[in-house]
Amino acid sequence: MLDPDNFGPRLSSQAAKPIAPTRFEKGKKARTPAAPREAFTMGRAVRHALDYNPTTGASEAAAKASEEGRKAALGELFPELSTSYSYGYQRQDRDPSNFSNSQPADRGTYTWNMQVRQILFDGFRTLGTYQKQALQAESDRASLRQSELETTGSVQESFINYLCAVENVRSQQEAVARLADQLDITQAFHDVGLRPMLDVLQARVDLGDAQRELITQENTRDTSLAELNTLLGYAATQGVQYQGALVTRPFERSLEECLEVAYRMRPDLYVGYKAVEMAVKDRLIARAGYYPQIEAYYSINASGNTPGLQRAGNNGSRSTTWEVGASLSWEVFQWGTTYFSDQQAGWLVSRARSQARALMLDAGLEVKQNFLSLREAGKRIDVARQNVAHAREAYEAALAQYRAQVGTNFDVLDASSNLLSAQVALTTARGDYLIALSRLYRAMGEFHPELL
Image (tube, rainbow, N blue to C red; front, top):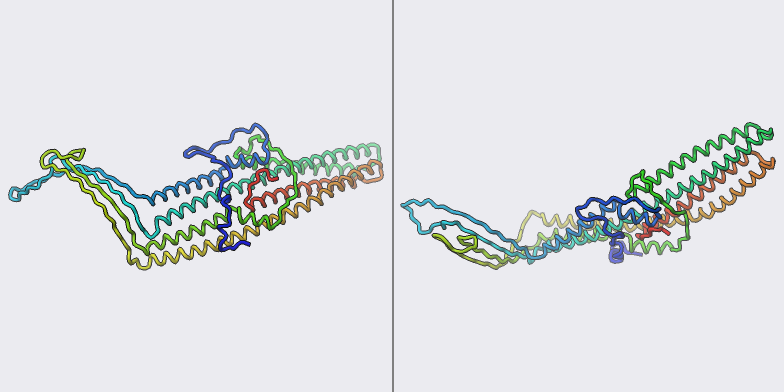
């Protein structure tokens, strides 16, 4: 088991690495996907969404911004160079009774100054700020990976729902065809006086109900298609083709193996760990007020009566001075401002640690829930397969008996309905299995674009 108070070092650095390459260039508009030339498989659809999904692009922009902030904070650790160049003209109106030998230059004065300053010690404020920004950059990279995993899961679930809808439409079309054939048989028997009109009317009602349900299933399929288009960055009305099948395979890992992978690979746990480290750095920055600030400096100051800092004209002069030194400043008393800021940062560290422990517990719960859902769906698939086989056999038997005039119309209609229910149950179980598998991989922090 992992220690909730010290789980960070056990997290893999892979949890912080994004999955897809850069999606856009700085200052450029978001790219619009070109019209697809071939049908999308699940894996290709996932990778396409990682390139064009706006939510993932926003997370990538945040990660890049944090990296630039880290570079900016790094610059604060190095010497600061500043320079200035100025010109001034002075005129003095003299009183004859108060004569002075010091007269301003008649061409004015040009002055140039350059100064280099280096912070030697500031209570670790600058260093702590850089370390916090570096942690933020790592955290945002992990957040980007988390966003990519969530996008992957969303595309996969939408893709699976679309495949289920296509399969349900096919099953419903078969049911409509069976009921249409049964209506024809019943009508033919009625025409020769072998069946009452009640059987014909019941067959028509069941056929109408099946046609109405077919319309509903087709609408569900088209809605799933529009949702899938949107996730891939296409317009909801664009004609994009998708291909795939509800194929399931046994999942070989144990629950303990899944938990171990999750604790090592989940990006949100990595983010939680970095949040604890950033809270510690915030407290380091808050404590900087306890210490003095020491900095060294070197400056050069030159002046003259020409733009080239030379001497010219009446009362002109030229001078160059340089200075090197160090300064110390210390805010000795601030009415407890630093102390209470330190205490506040300490409580925020405690909060971050508690949140990290909660994240780890939630991660374990999420993995186990999806693992159990996957196992349940697998068992349902086995039962549903048998039910489909039995229901098909029962329908064929009922139809044969009806044609031989030893069965009733209601037996055939009931068997057809049972066959349709069994087919839908099998499709639902397969879809639930694949969705549970997708969620389990996401809960583990693993990237499987093809899912299987």
